[in-house]
Amino acid sequence: MLGAAGFVGRHTALALARRGYRVLGVGHGQWTDHEWHRWGLSGWLEADISIEALDRVTADEEPVSIVHCGGSGAVSFSYTNPFSDFERATQSTAAALEWIRLTGARRTRFVLVSSAAVYGDQGDFDVTENYLRAPISPYGVHKAAAEALCESYSRFFGVASSIVRLFSVYGEGLRKQLLWDALNKFRRGENQFFGTGNELRDWIHVDDAATLLTLASHKLQSTFEVFNGGAVHATTRQLLDGLACAYGHVGGIHFNGELHKGNPSRLTSDCGHATRLLNWAPQVKLENGLARYAAWFKSLPEAGGAGDRHD
Image (cartoon, rainbow, N blue to C red; front, side, top):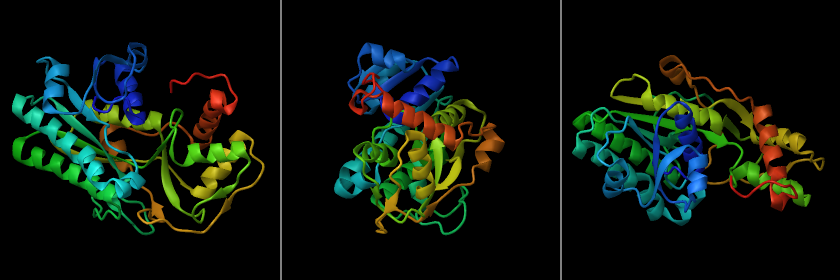
């Protein structure tokens, strides 16, 4: 598991462990032994993702799969640190693919966590996996470059690869992005938000994302596959209204009407391919997911609750 200390990575590691797999992690996070054990890891190496790190963590074993959950995970970061974002997306992907090629680990499947950002501005419909990739942000371009590496190694070197394009992932433990920012605003009594409120997204709870990545890592597939990972279509206004209700915020929701470069007005998916080939279907309803997130936020010490800091 690459990037196992990240939000999606840790949930995927736990999902794999619960299915009986021995999970070894590489990445950055400065975890204590207790923390990485808690998330299902049998071993953890604090290091850059590289061929040498993979040699160390595998210790001559041939893994069933390498799931890559590393990367910056933010469109905004790609504008302020484009070269670093490129390196995080592509260099680590190339290292893992090259490790598989060099070791001859033909039974190892590489699973890349990619993003809906590779599609760009899709227009008024749900994208399928064969939709033209036309990213409108550096982040999307870098994810598309990482995907191209997977396709190249699959085509020319026989490295089995699955790409999972996750849409808007949320869930307990995520301390950034829209839901986190919204609850902090609600706590301060604020109600002003960026955008129009009509931006349409595909929201997927991290538990469902982890299940999809787990299935992609071991289910029988062709040498190269691409899957969409989305769940519930909802506008920003619908999402924040639901979150406000779950949290108990009564001050209303207001939008400033401004638009942000790199963020399309609609980004939604058709996930039928994952359903047909992997027998995957999202289980967490948006209403329940928002209630869980609001309850988790209330439990944090800085929110006035009694929860611990380890998320």
